[in-house]
Amino acid sequence: MSLNNIRIVMINTSHPGNIGAAARVMKNMGLSRLYLVNPKQFPNYEATAMASGADDLLSQATVCSSFEEALQGCRLVLGTTARERKIQHEFIDARDAGVLSIAESQQHEVALVFGRERTGLTNDEIGLCHKLINIPTNPDYSSLNVASAVQIVTYEVMMSLRTFNQTDTSIEVNKSEQDIGGSEEYASSENMERYYQHLQQTLIDIDFLHLQQSPQLMPKLRHIYNRIRLKQEELNILRGILNKTQKLKL
Ligand code: SAH
Image (cartoon, rainbow, N blue to C red; front, side, top):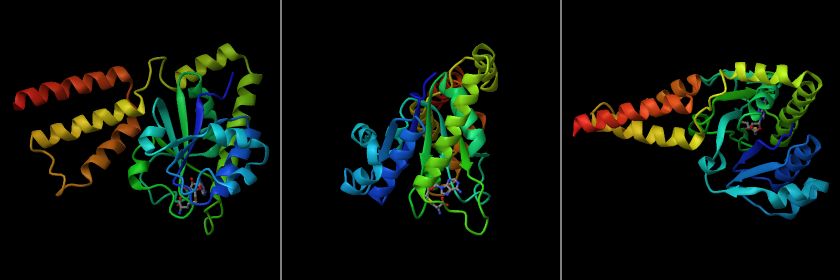
């Protein structure tokens, strides 16, 4: 059992020291795949200093110019946020996130996403996450340093891996398959993005959507699909319906 299918994605990090500190805790917890979306300063000596002996993770880190690029190949995307109840989305705590990540990483790639130091994740970025992780904190002071948040979530991943390894693997694998609803693959992030583009274009074509008048429609639709989590087979059916609908219009 390995943690190779789990990646940590840090978005637009301002302080290079936080990237280094995150790399260090990742390596402590047995994770190695770090994705950096438009980091403000990277590579940087402060990142290297804070990484201590984990500078190998920094040199292997994948630097991306968009969040979508960092999610390529992922079929489960879990975002983290300190703002719990203000956002309408499914929330889980870090412990459940560890269990879910280990169960699903047996089948496919999983992304754990961390936001900007000051402003966290944007609504658009949250729209690309299937669920949000909130680390329970003092409600009057809930915002952790981003590397501390990486520490807590990756610790839970490590603890869940230990439990998984200690139990009968065959039973656990079956259980994880059941948890995610069978062995058929979930649609990948990039296929979902293609679907959303197709859906948006079709809704415009049939005169249902006027982007300027209803800017919230697509985010709301994304929210519905994230709640359901489509399998690839199901996505193919919906793409087929969109194709037919577009032809009817022409
Ligand atoms: N106001 C921002 C705070 C950003 S803190 C927000 O509401 O999210 C920087 C990052 O650390 C966050 O984007 C998130 O990835 C992580 N983080 C901080 N506190 C957290 C918490 N209590 N639960 C989950 N993630 C948290």
